[in-house]
Amino acid sequence: MIRRIAYHFLTRLLTALLSFGVVWLTARYLGAAGRGAVSLFVTDCAAVLLFIGLLGGSSLIYLSPRYSSWKLLVPAYGWAVAVCGVGTLAVGLFRPVSSAYLTHLLVVTICQALLSTNTSLLLGRKRETAYNLLTIGQVLLLAGGLLIAFVGNWQRTVDAYYYAAYLAYGLPLLLSFGALWQLPDRWRTGQSLRQVVRELAYHSRGAHFSNILTFINYRLAYYFVAHYANVRSLGVLSVGVSLAEALWLIPRSTALIQYVDLVHATDKQAQLAPTLRTTRLTLLATGAGLLALCALPTVVLTRLFGPEFGAARLVLWYLTPGILAVASNIMCSTYFSGLERYRVNNVAAGLGVLVTLAACFWLIPRYGIRGAALAMSLSYSVSALYLLWQFLRDTGTGLRHLLPGPADAAYGVALWRKWLLAQRGTKV
Image 1 (cartoon, rainbow, N blue to C red):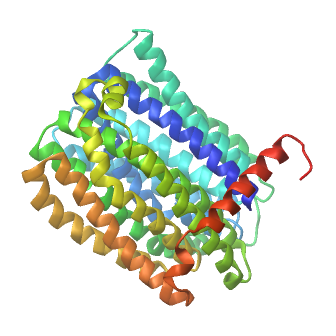
Image 2 (image 1 turned 90 degrees about the vertical axis):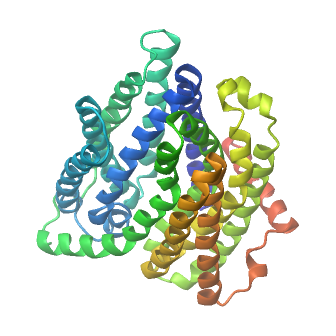
């Protein structure tokens, strides 16, 4: 398990570094306004793609050990294409955007939706190497495409991001079809397609509703900033948020492996002890990363991204408590998802939405991007506190079991050293 977590962590670390490269390239060569425009496009894509999980998403991981690959993909593909079409139309109705923008949005979201469906199914079948390579490939192609466009002086406009996105999601999508074709049971018989659709819809509604609410907590502030301030301010906010959220690669790496193991485990209770230890190590690593990030002086940010982005450091400070709260949030919500306790996650996300709405309406018109960062932190903290309370009550553990200590730090260092030595072929 530790080796698998390490590989996933390294995959996500590389992905985060490449994503940082995308943020740097768009901020450096497009300025705050261009970075804000890219952030709005990415947010629109995420908002559209959010609803494909109502008939797919993490439920594909959950059901993949039980059902035929082909019969899971048929309803997931059909739903994904329909959602992308309706979602693109909704963006055009609610926001003043050009027809070219909507075309880019439709093509990119369809590629992302189908690729996400394929990789979820591969992960559910424990094809983790293929999953990791496809995950890295997306961001590598996106960063590489932007690097060629910007540094090569081919096109230094927001349109360059759209064309790079075609490459980044289109090529891995084609490669993912080859990985799916190698699954041994793609034509398994004896299963009713109607039964598969019903089961997929049942689990998706419960599992994904909290993801919809969580997205509101994460990104609603972007639209408020674009409305009450301007796209330039949104660009500065997005840089600060991107830097802070990069630390989420730590809990997301460990939580992903825990979720897969919990789904496949026959004895769910036996997974509690490794969950607690991994949670402590995750909180410890996230806290250390936060300290390093907050110690960055303003001059570093301005030299990296440009003179417009010095205010991103203040955003980091306001986001700090929320980022640490999300680390515990991810671990606890993964535990309840693996046990099909979706209602707990939904209530936690719902509480966060209430805080997000109130805080955005009150703080952003008065304090701009500082208010946006504070609104995010408040929302994350409320959700995390509720999940933590439910987790402690459900498992019968005390708060001290989640607090990392020196023994956990020593254990983590020892595991990391053991893994490094194993990669070198040294017997430990």
